[in-house]
Length: 112
Image 1 (spheres, rainbow, N blue to C red):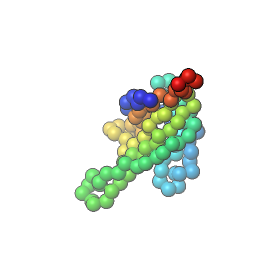
Image 2: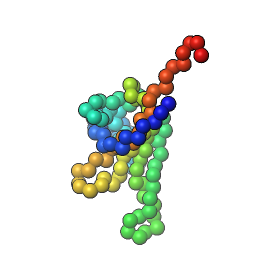
Image 3: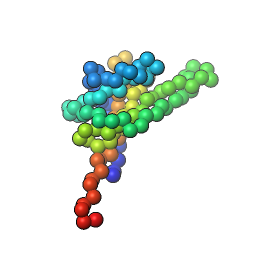
Image 4: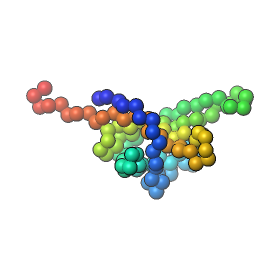
């Protein structure tokens, strides 16, 4: 299975967001998202993790910078997506990003 690096903004369909984790400060992971004008449907979350970093103002505290998800999709293989807690630049900067895609595993042939 090959993994392709993408790093492009994706648009979550907010009405499909899983809001159950928002009470503990995590983003609502969308069950559908738009990438390159195509709607992608998330079938399952395979794993999730957080990326942390030091405070930018000199405090010794650590803050969550990104929430990462590795998700299986209905028809587009496995995607690594992340939510950037501090969008870069302009006020309406994208927060959800597609980092990479792994093609779906091909089924072994019956003769192998």
